Image (cartoon, rainbow, N blue to C red):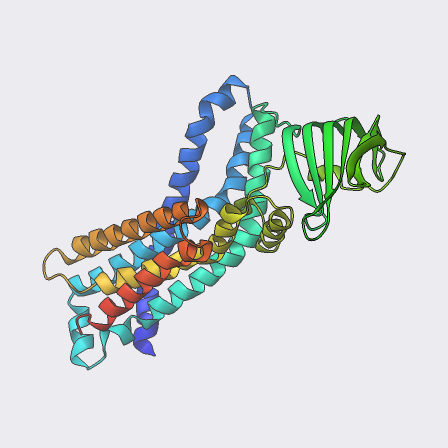
Length: 354
């Protein structure tokens, strides 16, 4: 349709300019936030530019929703200001039909954001963070203390005082074995365990187990049954936000199987799918706010759209915080703001001036 092509033609240049400006602004903010530390560590300009280059995809991810909102509000406001929509409405075309191409663009942007974040943003952001730590001489220890993990579907429980990742040694180790029903079978205590590449070798291990109704202890013979990988005990800083969707789902499953807290990770996992819909949500809000003002149309459209988007992000922040803390189900925390604002935006769009 001619009007569809005309609207998209008016929208695209404004969106490209807006997203370019927001990406540049975000990159400059990140650069100047670390500039003093770069200078103190005498980081070459070429390496600083590499860090900024790796940050470009993340900046684009952040800039896309707000750029869509700005471009849609500006485009529709400009058409109202030039009285072009008056001719369109006079021809009997409803506003929601006229704005349909923008809704399609918002939906496609949401789909694009999910795959773009999953396959490009996450790897490049990790490269950026790793390079920044190297340039700024920030070391990250993989040792860990006070470890409690469950393995083999909860039938084996490890309690470790300290894990030395470099030497792959466990210090102060207690291993509790229990039946699938949760009944105590045995307790193994050892001051030290070393990884051989295939299994853990326990030094001076003592095993406590029931015999004739009495809990007895005796030295544990050499065994190779403890085969949990060293990475199981390593300090794991992996967050769902830093992993592709598939790996994030596996991480949630591992935490659940190990008996570790997983509510926060599950909330972040659901948020991975709900957050890209922000592009579609802000587009609905921007379109639904258009045409509701008779004076200062362009300015009021921009301000109202921006205000609605701020409310959306604040509601999302609050709902995700409650989901991470376990006050509400993780899936509700991730999707509730999206559902609410899609309903509100659709209702406003259905009652828009036409």
